Amino acid sequence: MQLSKRLQCIADYVTEGKRTADIGCDHGWVAIYLAEKKRAPAVIAMDVGKGPLKRAREHIRARGLEEKIETRLSDGMAALKKGEVEAVVMAGMGGPLMIRILREGRVITESLDELILSPQSEIAQVRRFLAAEGWEICREEMLTEDGKYYTIMKAIPGTARERTEADFRYGWRMIQEKNPVLYQFLRKEEQTRNNILENLLGKDSVACRQRIQQLRRDLAVIREAIDRIEKKSEVDTYEM
Image (cartoon, rainbow, N blue to C red; front, side, top):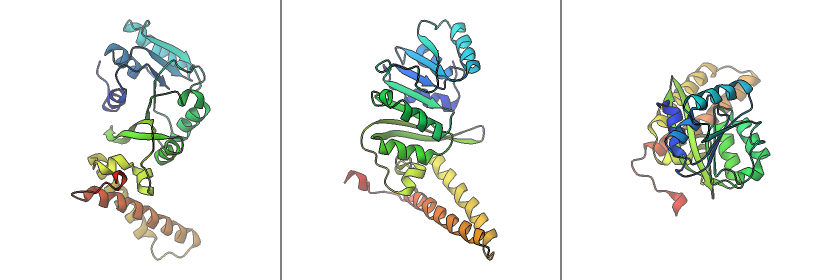
């Protein structure tokens, strides 16, 4: 089967041989791919919505994978038992919801070998949560699909390396690896904020002054990330 670029990246991040739960499986395509390619010996496809789970079951049945993929109606990890899987995939949901699921399912989360996450919002908040909970982002990618930017990350138990505001907002690893899509995104963000700032300069309301201060703070963080990407050789101070 042919996955979208985003779903393919998510599936590729799952370590081969890991029993995997796809939380918020939607149509079930990632679960199906992992089972068909024998990347995961067992897959549990879970969703809080009856409609999405019904569609996932239909797709699984159509491909004769009922023995390899179990489906469960579940709010987050509520229907998952400790020790059933080593990897969890979560995509297509906002960062705060993702954090809630990981926090409420902490007994499960702490037993896992890896998390593959693709938050649709509040990505910096997700990175901060992972760092606080003892997870290291070992792989991270930004890509575009249908005109939208997506971030996919893989985290394993360990010490987080994110230390500056730019690290948390844009990803230490992607900055170090000079991810070209991230660089494109940063340049667009810089231009957008500069345009807004230019329109606000000279206005003297309290709200405008506060907005100008925030824009300048944002631009400083964006500029830090851009400067680090543009350096021809970067000394990795995290390894010293």
